[in-house]
Length: 146
Image (cartoon, rainbow, N blue to C red; front, side, top):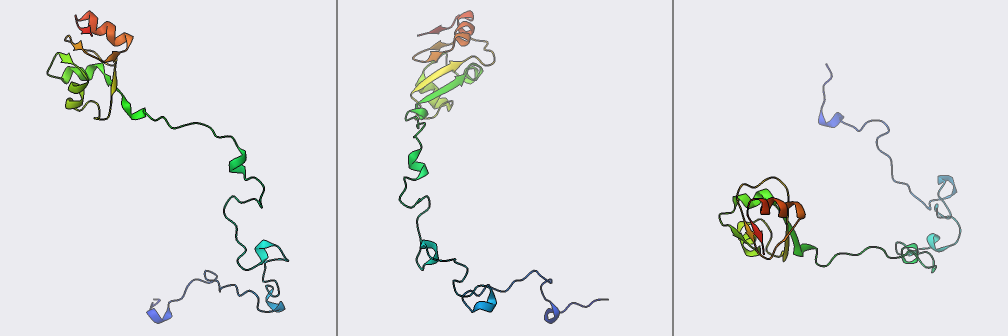
């Protein structure tokens, strides 16, 4: 049986490589120019340029046209499904009632009721926009939209 001791442990053959020592003579293969080639910015100490720099030419990210935008009022709009109104205790529903029930976030300013699911009682909606399908379903039960 093979006995393993700490003093006999060693890495697998070929798994470790010694550091490349550049600029140490012609016999090393990396002497004289130390693998940097001849002349130019990259061959010199401190030869650095920022990412995207193209030697003074207008960089690609500035040549291409700007596209798209971020909608400023995206968080102002919300939607509520018709069947979730069923859980509310009151018949008169407005934006404040929906916020208190937690159906829309506090920063929402405009809400639309969309037809998803069914309702079994009438509601009076105040100051809310309603999809055509939801409007038909509410008016069928005797509800109204103000």
